Image 1 (cartoon, one colour):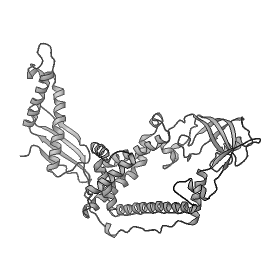
Image 2 (spheres, rainbow, N blue to C red):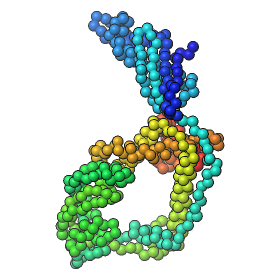
Image 3 (cartoon, rainbow, N blue to C red):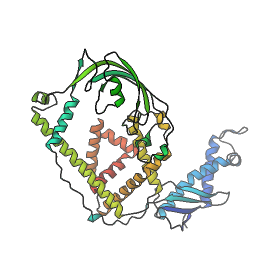
Image 4 (tube, rainbow, N blue to C red):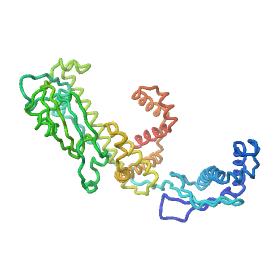
Amino acid sequence: MSPAEIKESETKESATKREIQVEIPVEDVNRQTDSLIQKYQKVARIPGFRRGHVPASIIRQRFSEEIKTDMVEALIPRFFKQEAERLSLHPVSQPRVTDLHLHDGEPLRFKAAFEVLPEIKLEGYKELRADKPEIAVSEADVEQALADLRERHASFNPVEGRALADGDFAQVSLDGNPKPEQKSDEGKSGEGKTGEMKSGEGQPVHMDEVLVEIAGQNTMPEFTEHLRGTSAGDERTFDVNYPEDTQDKRLAGKTFSYAVKVQSIKQKSLPELNDEFAKTLGEFQTMDDVRKAIREQMESERKHEAEHAAKDKLVGELIQRNDFEVPDSLIEQQIDIRLERGLRALAAQGLTAEQMKKMDLPRLRVGQREQAIHDVKAALLLERVAEEENLQVSDEELDRELESLARQSKQTSEAVRARLTRDGGLDRIRTRIRNEKTL
C-alpha cells in the first residue's frame, strides 16, 4: 500500500486543472507529531519545569495549535509532491489545499487543487515558411542619416541686439507646476492609450539652460507663441496643455503653468559634410568612409528587424495551428514579468515610487492578459518543437552567451555564471538560446 491513498479528480472540463485527494497514514502523522514535541521540549520555557525537561503531555496541551500547524506545513508539501510524481503529474502551480481533516489518532486527509501543462499535439510546424524580404538602403536613407548626424553635432552661437524670431533658439530657465486635473471619462477612452501606465498627479518641473526652438517642429505651440519677440532677460508666464500621446508620461494629458525667463538667444550652426568633419567622428578619413559605415549599419539593423518580424509571424502562425488551454498560473506569472518591465521603463523616465503606487494595477493586469497568453503559448510550442527536433544547447553555446553578458556588464564570465546560478538564471538563458535555435 502506498503511503498516501490518492484519487485523481473526475473533473474533465479542463485540460490544465487537477484535484487529488490525499490520505496520510496515522503512523506518519504520529511520527511527525512526536518529532515536533521533542523539538518544543528543547526550547519551551514553562514555570515549574527546567528547560528541556517539560513532560510531553504538557507540551502537547500547551502548544497543540502550533504543533498542528507545523505538522501540516511539514507533511502536506512532501506527500503532495511524492504522490503527484507517482501519478506522473507535474504541477506548474502551488497546490490549493481544502477539506483538511486532522484529528488525533486518525490519518491526515486533504484535497489539493493545482494546474498542469496541457497535452500539446504539435501540428503543422514543418509546413511553415519564413518571409525573406529584400533588405535595401537607398541613397535618400543615407542622406537622411547624415542630416541627423549633422543635427547631433550642431553648435549654438549667441545672437545679440535683436529679439527672438522663428528658427532661433531661446536658452531659458523655467519652472512648471501642474494645474489641478478636471474630471474626465477616462474609463471610456478604451485600451491601448499611453494613459494606461500614467501616474495620476503631475510633479513640478524645474530646468536650467534648456534650449527652446522657436516654431520648431517639436516645440509646443504655447512656447513659440509666448517667447517669439522676447529678448534676453524677459520673463513670461503661460499654460501648456499636453496631449495624451506626449512621450514624457509625467506630462501626458496634463496642463502645466510655466514661469520662463529668457537668458540668451542662439542660432544653430550645422557642420559641413567634408573630410575634416569625418575625421572628428572616429576612425574615418573621408565622408565616403562615413557613408559606407552608415549604409552597413542601416542594412544590419534592417536585417535584424526583418528577421525579428519574420520570427514573430512564424510564432503567430504556429499558435493559430495549435490551440490549447493555458494554465492560469503561467499567465499570471507572465503578466507579472510584463508589468515589471513596464514599470522599470517608467522609472527610467523619472516616474517615482509614490506615483507608481497610484496606478490602477488591476486594470493594467487586464490590459496585459492577452499578450501574456500569446507569450506563454509561444514558449510552450517552441519547447515542443525543440523536443520533436531534439534540439539541445551545448555547454559551448552557453559559455559564449555568458561571455557576451560579461562584456556587456563589465564583469568576469565566472562572476556572471555565479550570479545566474544563484538566482536560477542559467536555465532561463538555456531556454532562450534553445528557442532561438528552434526559430
